[in-house]
Image (cartoon, rainbow, N blue to C red; front, side):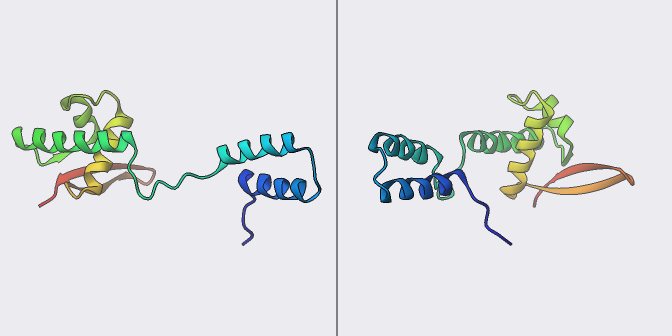
Length: 124
């Protein structure tokens, strides 16, 4: 499979060509600035701000489930019972974070050939 040409690689190639052919230094400087903007930023596994927040809310979710003696939930339950979760996508993000942390286990319930439901249970 061929490697995909990125903007960064294209700019790098163009800059090298322009430098080798003594092109206008101001143009080269502008392209180098653009290249720096397109460079991928290695985060070395750093978590995003949203992910850190979702993991905190995931712990709050577990505490809420234990306080209410609930062992099995769906995204709608999270939206209705956990402060800071107002939408279904946010509830799913929190549930995914809790699953990734090992706090919940996820199972799939087949409702029909085209419809599935995700159920989350407390991990032991």
